[in-house]
Length: 233
Length: 233
DNA sequence: CTTTAAGAACTGGTTAACCAGATTGGTTTG
DNA sequence: CAAACCAATCTGGTTAACCAGTTCTTAAAG
Image 1 (cartoon, rainbow over the protein chains, first blue to last red):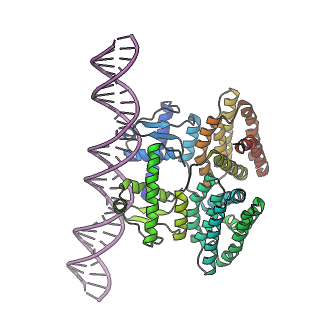
Image 2: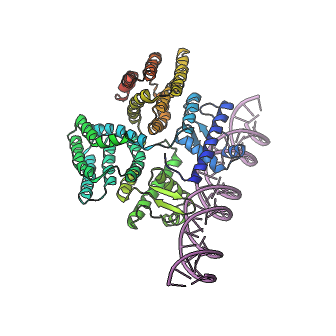
Image 3: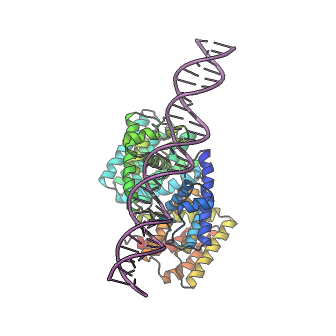
């Protein structure tokens, strides 16, 4: 998910090799969901790597819900079944760094949904936060300063108002990389920033009026430039 | 993102308090993007917590792209700006466990997109993998066995074929929790499993024929039951 | 022979000491 | 006076010892 420096990248390869070895071990020993994995010490000895490497690999598999560590007890295979486990580990091993195009594509997808959900579910508190972010954005643009951050904070406020915690989390995950890339490629110039103020206001008003369709339409307008940019890389 | 046991949950609170202290420190000292954070040792002393706690907190902020550690050098504030950083940390601190409804809602959103992207971008290799997962699924259903895992592997194959690494990653993240909840609530009965075979075949054929619209339609059909279920919780 | 209780061994988690490389400040040299 | 170099220091990362529970073995008691 994130860019890593060289030493960490080498580490990544070790981690992946450990993960695949764990998978092989599970298959070879025919371990089933709920069964206990050999201890971290044994694994580190068997694989001839440090225990911390083993721990990192286990933590990664734990993040994806494949393993589950219990303190002072052991590491267990989650209840997702052997077939799913093998398939998922396969997928995890070949996960590649997200390219900018895939990030933007995903962002557009998420936001067209969160904005319409937000129009249905927003509370008054949500509206306040959105308005606050909106004003911070217009202030900066009017002062002629860069406002990429304030822009995205407005969008994060919408994600929060969507009432969907998963989408909210995903927006948080992709946001910093979006910011970095935006500032790197200078996606937004000042003309667009000024147009952005009105577009944000339109979106805000649609959400306030609890009109999902209109909110989605206004968001599409807002994304028009981004959309073209994304598909011209 | 994942369910954690009690001891880890206590840990979570410590971590969050450290994160907010780091944020306060950055604001108080007016640190800007690129600036160096105090060393882990100093922070652990200042906050009166263990260094490993500080490291975990930093790693979490690194995952969300807010900090960046350089070995033998220091931890630096990423180039996302002070405003965005404050907003994001705020959001990270109040991230809640994803509820099942939000998971399903997100899955439907992602899959309706990945399936249409897959129809446009799938390679022959992608088709092979999808067909393999499809056959594994029908075999199990015909033998009367539970096939939730094989079902999801087919869907993961589609995500992979979408050529969008971000969506692929997100599908991987939510899949294990979907499986757990499915098996807990017994969402799919045997009748639906049988219908599922034909629905999967329809989706597969649409992707093979490179017809995005049709593929999306067939996926909608496949999700019809799930959709109702999701909105009746 | 069964039950139970005690203890040895093992578990993941934590802590503190250690490492190699980057940084920095002062000293030397041109 | 400026540039170059070198060593003391500080950095995040790594390793090994330690900790507090859990689990399994075993032997004693019923």
